[in-house]
Image (cartoon, rainbow, N blue to C red; front, side):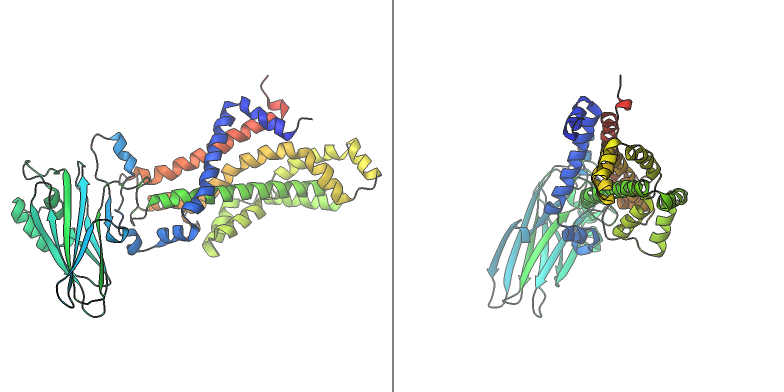
Length: 453
């Protein structure tokens, strides 16, 4: 009998199996690497955070790779933060208690479209007197535009689009009634109509600190119509968080459910065949009753009335799947194996019941179990995603199904946000395709009757 290693080597003769193994290997690598590059607590913080976390991302921005397929270079997000060392910051003393902090944020803007929003985030530490900030916008052609001024509390944001005084000032300078703030700041006055003036822009901010121990940090964000490798959603969340963490969650759910279901089912079938009698009959009756119980409606009921925890769902899936129709398939094989001569020999030298079950019966059907485990994985992966799409996914975890559910709820396809629903859908299809191709090839390797002549 060929060893398992020799059988696995035969997979190289199946091109589809090689492609499937590559897909599975990539999914496993992403699943292993993701917790290191983005720890679980950090991922949950980014996914379930508030305005302080998501506020620096644009709303409903497409992935940055969209620019590769269009002739128009759409604006990307630009973030400059003094805490991260961005900008040129200088602090000078004006008097014993008053200091001046100058922030100069310079950036290149080579894009063909206007950014949707501009915001300055300010964070100050002081005792009683709030710092005061004044900002000046300098365009590539040398024009200086006084943007505005504001007092800074512990956390303050200045949103350019919401400043009516700045809009009226830009209307006078551009001569265009109702011009938006962003259009007025980035418009090329030498061109007819509203056209982006590409080049290097600078935002100079002067902060007055009225206490010796007070501190001030500023961050400038030019929101883009595209952002990151995966884009953002309606709550400004970076979709890459859910795409990355959805991989280990999907793989863990699918592999654990497939492995546990198959192994437990196989052991139950072996025990029933060996002991026979009322035990075997009871297992068969339970299997027949369980085969007509719908799994998905039960999961929906539990998720609606009790809990949507992914671990409870996983346990329930395993519990309701171990008495599946596979028990009858394994039972038919075990009935033949039970009559083998080496089983009689094991009885003769006094082997115990459990030794015969686990040492002589179960190993005989392992070649059939391995393909079964692989082919079951995508089904359980899609089951977990289906629960999330129905709104019954774990409310804490960012998953592929949760992305699809959010996209459907917010009308992503209707509003043209195709990336929002296509990215997780494609990952689900790729995962299912990879395991399916390997599983079918394993069937042919371990079952000679399925091999091509």
